[in-house]
Length: 500
Ligand SMILES: *Cc1c(COP(=O)(O)O)cnc(C)c1O
Image (cartoon, rainbow, N blue to C red):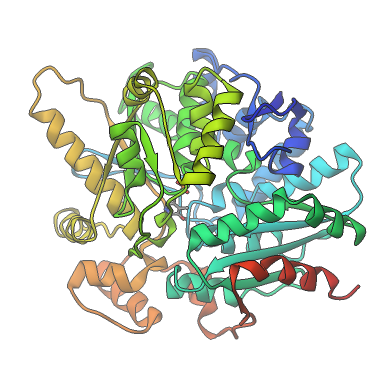
């Protein structure tokens, strides 16, 4: 499969798209076409385990990668997850299903792709004959950072550097990142919010001068953010896998439409669901669930994207984002793959924080997506009631999606003509990753210490505490640097200069 850029950049191979991360003019790589999965193939997938399902689907995009080797890499990636199934689907007593994507090394769904990306990148470099050292840069709202650090630490020929907003991540996320060991990792706090971090990293990528300075030192930049197609494609697999699990447990019949509710920030996770639909998975509605930073809810409501507004800190920090990067890929599709128009809209976004789609485009978007948001109070109430009723503790991000899904179903139930589908709510993090806020939602109690929160949630819910979170408790914090956004590149150069 070849990949083209959303702003008109030329087609490149899958390996090139992964290694470059972002296209030359700032566009994002998208597949030249969506490979189809036939009904027979879908039924064959159902007989496979998760790594096999993923290998089959990734094979459709990464044709130049060796299939056997890919399967081995996927087995290795998902062997790091706790339990037998990296993406179990759990039926809830409210009739919905939770797709638990948090059993990986860092307890959030980012692990689903970031345990695989190192292989895709390393192999991509081999295929392209690239010999320079790679520098993986990531901006993080908390979860990508740790997942990238874990994925790349101590890998040969790679350095990984993560920027996070000083005040924009949870204590546990900060601890997770700050305690990462490994000779090739660096973690830097940025004075600003996530959008400042993301803009800073994008600027480094867009700067020819920065790229040249790094190349002089034998270092090639690449991205671990969800702008990298190597993040997006592995995420398609769990939508197919969930569908298979519904089929094999006789919850649905072949061809039946299934809705997915996705807690959304950078629009990567939900975009993978849209890609799955384009590949032929019987997907009904995609529920785009936002927190109080509801720029996407407004966009799907009005057709105008307006990122010029204050960014609130919420208890679902991984969704505290005003510029959802991956929306560019959807805009490209919805405009009939009009690269000039997409480029124009993105120019307008960076100049004025705004752009609009046409009313035809908006109608098409509304046929695919349903968008809503949950306030902080709504989320707390939803987590509390869900636990009271069904005994299941959700994390704060999943709580946002569940709140939106429940409201959606309630609305449908009032409409006799409405067609109702089984609902899968995508659960993106372990409740233990946000222990203070989850404990507050469950009991109304505040605790200062994250691990006290973990202990109390455990006593209350009896849910198993992930080993990886237990392990960081007594580890030293190794990274303490904080910089303003305009000093990010200087930090990169410092890091690259080390040891040379
Ligand atoms: C990253 C993240 C999200 C948002 O996912 P996007 O792909 O950025 O939309 C939601 N929940 C958690 C726990 C996350 O880490």
